[in-house]
Length: 286
Image 1: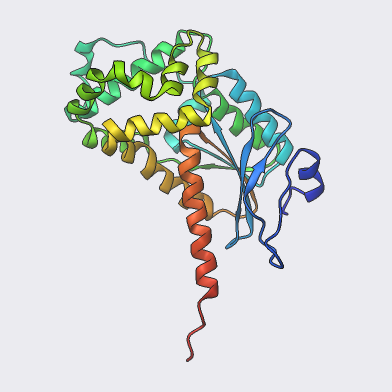
Image 2: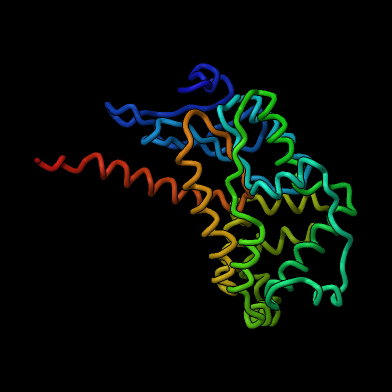
């Protein structure tokens, strides 16, 4: 273990096993003093530890969970799903723009797809800003709490403009139309996803959407109707974030959207298998 001692981890619920005579811990779940668990992953190439927490980005509950996790682990690095530009806006408290009409869409730079996606994202943030919720508060709390425990702050996501550009290139109105036409019959095929959407209270809805079954169905719906869009917004970002996280040393707490966790775990596990395979290869004779 690094700055997080084995005794301290066990006292708050982390138990790991070793692979026979080897010293590499098997991945498992780390349970902080809060109810929601973070995924524990070990990097055998750097001997670093990752505590990966998936959150909903909107509820105050997520901010509390993030704060408690960082207090418990006291990591060397706190990594957040932000680029430097978005982090700066979040830290300075820059207000979200007011909700815009369809006429304002024409003033947005870029292709029709970029205009549409940027318009939807801006209005979504504007709607949330009108509630008691504070989107992104958990990421701001992660940065502040990380600094309090002396951790480095790492921004592991791609630029917002890059994400929107890729998403716009892969977005089609055909997929949106297909989803709209089949919306009624989809409710019976994906009961967890649509069941979560029925909650009027945003906190209850967010908690329901964080359930593994609902997250799984969310990705299934996206890949069924918007496969290229999901690749750009989810899978490619997963690859980018995992690559950055695997370069880090010491103990790391990473805060990302819950929809990314499963894919990032698969990429991490594959990287570990590749490391084990490379170690087992014979050294070439020279």
